[in-house]
Structures are given as structure tokens and as C-alpha cells.
Image (cartoon, rainbow, N blue to C red; front, side, top):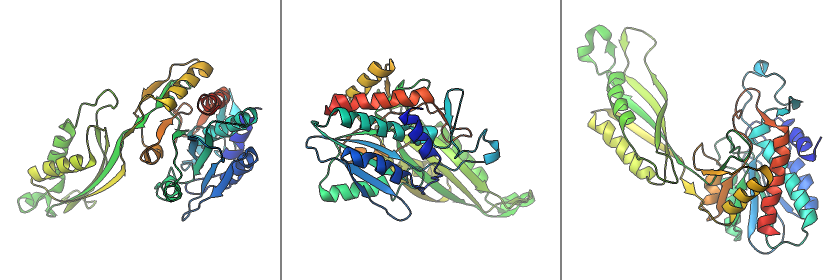
Length: 375
């Protein structure tokens, strides 16, 4: 059993369903303090955060990740208990194997080998670990960055261990993400009997027409860095439970994943205009959970793609697709940010897993990135 696999299994065995860290950060701390990294616990609310860095001068490289995992879903549907890690057919199974305890284990073993081989470096090494990435993401990375800003500490390069790979380890590296804008609309109508519809206003019918217009809207066509903006309705609720009553209200939730060609403000204005043009009586609230960011070719992206090519034998394609991550907060500080981690096919699913060989290759890729930037 390799050190990376052994550590990944130790982390998976801790049932750290968000925001509970379940002792994962204590385990991480015990491994990295002997490397000369000063560790600092920064708890906020129910969230555990770990900030660690060495005292070296020069640019600061940080591995960022999260110890929290999503709930397991029905345990009886798992082939083996989700928090009892097991290896079968070359894969490590368990909740968090791919998202992202496998990456954290690879961080640590890469740092151990790199620090042993390079006691003198031309830059500083750090880790930012939170238990609040899968949850609201309010008391995690954001709060740690606020502390660092007050102290004048600045991250230059950050690698987030999110599972970025699609078909094969290293085939995709995220060099940015789309923004995320959430809307909640309440459409008012007039309740009444379906047989006497002339005395009612059916909010379902009214919203259906507006929804068709929103669905047909071309928000943008994307560009060389970002795919087109997407609009998706995720929840619609209306009705009294009876089949002969027109409801008096409809609620819907929707989300935009938007490119840097648009702003959240422009999207809000366009949605409100469509709803108004269709004559809806509505109230609309918004939650902006992340702005788009992009890391262009430079020291970090070049080192990452080079390491993937040298160690993994793959040409990593830069991509800004997929969901959001804590990288969106770190990028706002001016840091170059990339995301590189295991294949993401099983994340958040029953029987989440990661390739055993991939874990060791990933650790070697991380080590090579450190060599390119700090050695």
C-alpha cells in the first residue's frame, strides 16, 4: 500500500459530512508540521479551517482543498459502507475518494517528498483546507482569506484539488470557472375554481409563457475561454393538492452559469424585463454565489500542464466548464488559480471511487509542479 493510498483511506474513514471535519485536519496537521509548515486552526461557526505555510521568502504556492463531503445517500445502495474505505478492482471506494480526500492525500505525500528533496526553496509552500466547501461556503475559504488579507499575506499561485479530469487523469485542467447566479421568483395569481377560470389569474399559465421566453433567450454565445451562458430552472412549486383549484401562487428557482462576457447585474435586468413584459405580478430575489474567473497561460498553468505531460503522459486541456469551487474566492485576491484532480465521473454518487494508480500519479504530478515553481 502506497503512502498516498493509506492516507486517503485514513481520511475517508472519518465521516466528515459538511460542515463536520471529523478530525481530518488534525491528521493533516500531524503530517505537515514536521515539514516545517506552521499550522494555524481558524474555526468559524461550525466550520474547521486549517492554514499552513512555511517561512520561506518568494512567491507563495498553496494547495487548497476541503475535507467535508456530501451526504452518502441511501447507505444500503452502496456496495460497501461509504466510510469504510475499500479497494476493489484497482479502485478505492468511499465517500470523498474523488471529491476530494484523494487529492488531499496526494497533496500531503507530494509535499513530504518535495520538502525532503528541497530543504532550500525559491518560494514558500502553503495549504488552505476547509470543511465548508460542500455547504454554504460562508465560513470556510472566504473567512480564511479575510484573515490573510488583514495580515498582508498574499497567495501567488494556488492549485485546487477538485476532481477536474473527465475520462483520464489529467486530461482536463480547470483554469477558470463560470459565475453562478441564483434566482427565486414568486408569481402571484388569484385562486379559484377551475370551472370559473374567468374570475381567476392562473400563475402557472402566466409563468409558463415567461419561462418559454427565458428558455429561448440567447444570453450569449460564449467565447474562446468560456462556453455559452446556461439558464436552468431547478424547482417549480404551485397548487393546493386538489385538481379542481387554480392556485394563487407559484414559486420557482433557477440558476445561471455565466461567462465573463456578462455580468450578474445584466442578467438580473434581462430576467426582470422578460417577467415584466409578460405581465407577471412577481417578486424576485437573487443570490450571487460566484463571479467568473480565468487564469491565462503563465507560470502556474504552464507548470501544471507541463507536469501532467511529463508524469501522466497526457496533454491537459484548459477548461472553464463545470461547477463552482473555492477557487472563485482565491482568484478574487489576484492569485493565479488552477484546478487539477481525479476523474470526476463518480463524485457525489453512490459508490464514489478513484483509481488507486491515479492517486500515486497525481501525487507525482503535484510534486513535479512544486519542482517547476519552487525548486
